[in-house]
Image (cartoon, rainbow, N blue to C red; front, side, top):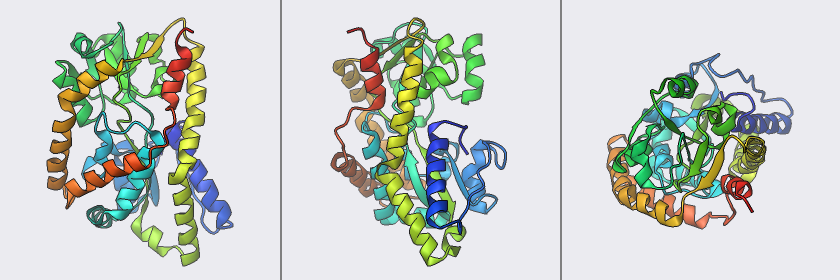
Length: 328
């Protein structure tokens, strides 16, 4: 599962508490610490093969199981946190090819939600694509790695627990991370400059239940679980994420003498997006078809339409934090 107190942990506990209460204890959950029952990079496989009944993890660990969810990794696509979550839920419920992938994998999707917008942390200010090549980067996800490469930079993938030491030793000089990473892992001690380049939401937690476990629930309890799932995707998880982001922002404010938090201009963001967006949308369709999703173009078109339809027009909590951090 997720680390205690982070957004994945809080969302999981909301979900399990609600299911337990509404089923009057007929359905209960034994939540284990991260890496105790299954290694982090095998949690989805553990749920699939029955070692765990339910799990939560970053979907990048097992991309072979989640061709439909890899759309979350596309930069410059998803900017509204609730629209991202609701659209991921709806397209995976509605699209025939996606439903077949889930059935083939023996998993029932509960939710997929973003840990937050991408921030770039660096030892010196990074204000546009022209500055990207000046830093050796740690990034997460195929498409952001490609975007860094397109800007003339270099990037590698490293697990978060190894990142602090890698920064100290100069293996990498900067990182992509959500707001949580700025202070929760003390990366601000080494990287004083943090900026939002306009990439948006770039990664996804996934929560799933084993298909047989789900099917073996009584009709009444399965209906309750579905009801809580709808509420989770309909706004409950986003409310939890916003509350946590407020706490994270407060931690950032308490360290303002050690770090700078800002965002790129629209012109700088557009310059980077124009380098990669259309090409990556096309390559996603080809790669996802090859990975087993029938009708990947239809799936992508539906997802993009849902993002627009579900847009709440609210200010993202990361951008709110940046605005409140800037001098008045």
